[in-house]
Length: 328
Length: 272
Image (tube, rainbow over all chains, first blue to last red; front, side):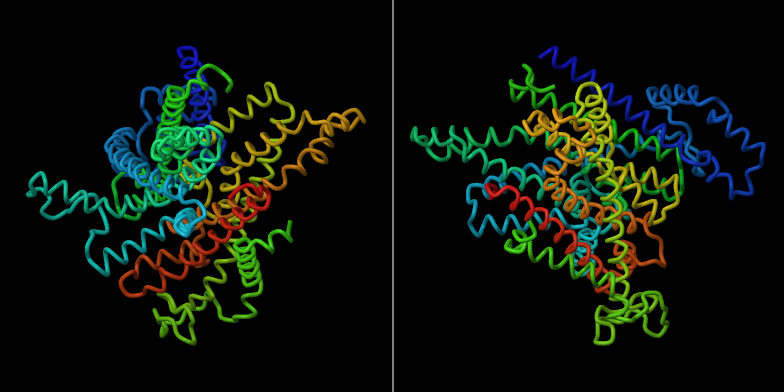
């Protein structure tokens, strides 16, 4: 296990380095210098100020020096200063938004698992029946649903027509301070229902479909036949023998689906006005705030990388075949 | 394969739907000669009627004409983006699978690195440095979605390259390029088609999401995504502006997903 860990860790660090280098390449190989969109059309910026900016961002240095400087900056979480009017350090801006995005995505992940696994198992056990077909139709719809349109439909139904749920923000803006603790929780929950529906819909469909197919496959295998022949009760066959084997690869699938989940934050945070990292990214792209864009890109990729690493470890803990070899 | 597709019920209907969509995107302006750009101040936000089957928008433009025009955009994006990702994915996957060793290791690591970026974030970052034009969006989607195909082709070639027919071709003195192109890749065509069909749906979803966020296809050019911006603004008064463009996206992506499912069934009859 120890050797496995070291190897995985080494691969992760290598991938991390690659991710950072690709991100660096993005800005510095793109045509034009990163300052031009900020300064070109802005008459207030004098040539002297531009000089100062170039010095400040180290753009007068040769490429390899900038590269090392950038790597050092990332490691010390120093991403420079935002191009926006407030000119705050980029890390400060991200730091206050990161918990919100992580909270929503973790909640979404838990909800996805809680719903998709039972649905997938149910569908597999009833494979071929009408119920299975209905679930399949639902999962295919989930695959194909544009999440932002789903968000619009929810807003139209629950926000506008029925007036049940607030359509924007994380909590009420009026009277929030006077609420008691429980009222605050309730207020948050109400604001989070629609964003969570949007965040989980596609994931539930995808994972349920995966669990179903994996379960169907396992149920056809010899050891299940054997367990049944032995006279084990069906419940035991399903949950002790089949489900365990069907769910193993799910750990990897979850790791792989993290980028999609986090990427979805851009969409539902922008639509529902949730002050998370996704909304920050969107605003930064619209205003071409390059330091913020780059820092965001790096951070979400590192989060994904960490998630994948944990999934790898989890898989090895759950399945001894992995850590003793066989896979490179 | 086409024959098998016709006898597969859902596969047939999704294929038919896509053909009709393709033809109406191509010939729509002749069959339904209404301008998607012309502004009519006196016809603002008309609900669906005989004259305007899907209603009119905030500037009095005909929604059906705009959806037909948007179909062109979506199909164009899906073809070009998937074409690009196939070229990249197939060649990198084939090289990795065929040569193995260090080359394979390096390509696999590069794939892992690209898989770490949440696609939307990567695309947004690149678009921010370029102009948000249709061409750039197609290229960027293509450049960020080749990894799946690469893995698939690599696995396929790995499993085939030690087989007898490859060895005999090599004995006859066929070059590596010839072996890859003539002997190995044709065996991988089917799974590539499956993933291309899924990839086209994915490209349409990403383009429409970007356009909806204001970072994709720019008005006045109509795309299904940017039509929904108006839909959001008029949520309370004009349901047809939110419903129809979204339905167009959903149905098209659903047809592509079902098509890829059908192809998979046909290729792998054991699958249920």
